[in-house]
Image (cartoon, rainbow, N blue to C red; front, top):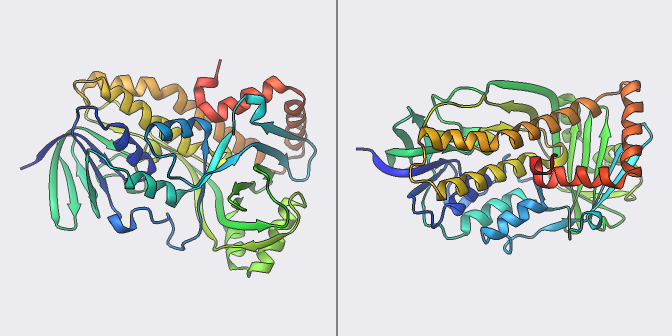
Length: 385
């Protein structure tokens, strides 16, 4: 016998957990299933234990505050973003003060964010150590540590791109960027002073994010380059990092454990079926450039919860159509924004390098253009004219 539930959320990562919290008090019964156990609730995406920094926009802070999840986070503010390209002229500085904000964004540990969200009291049921093994549009089959359970949700929400349920269609579009991100926590001789750095190289962007007294590194290179970087001892790795980044923060003096993950763009076609929706990485997986992926997913969760709170029939034809229509512009804009940045900046074409330099110089000379770019990164498509 299947258990009736209004909303079943598959995936207890930060986006799925945020959705469950946002649905509190909605009047709908909610079940969240998460493959990891409760005691390990927020293990890193890799098993290496390496720090995985995540950049939250100021708008994401506002959402987390409404979920009562902000005060429990150890967040480092980003007050300035320095954008430049390796081997070419042009650079720009985007400042929070120009946008009348206390910070453009914040850097937290992905692990800490998920733990914080899962630790908050939630009126919906949580099933840890469970995975969704099938969903036929009516019945959801969940494999738990105690055995199989079946649910009959009015709405199933897929919120985890790594464990999409059996029977789900593969992404309608996939682009392998042939890039790999190497992540680590590093220490520099000079203090970061709340500044984030986006340094574009021919292999991909190199981001340094202020993270406590250290910096969170997200270094995009070729797959072979990533293998070489992971194989280096710490002094050699720091030397390679200094050669790619430059002297802006002095010498790199320490590096924590390193990890890597392949980068690709994946997104599905606009779904038309009833009783199911995809949010976060289950709907779109983006390149980490400009830190848009999680922030887009969090907006997915917040807007879905807002719509569900006002709905009597979550999962109906009209409900699902309304949600897809409401999120279409922001979703398309997020995909196009990050994909365009990768295409424009991850190459050594001399003509494009010249054009990039001119664009960065123009951005630096035009305050209104900097404010628009900042608002686009913070608020998504809401900043578009």
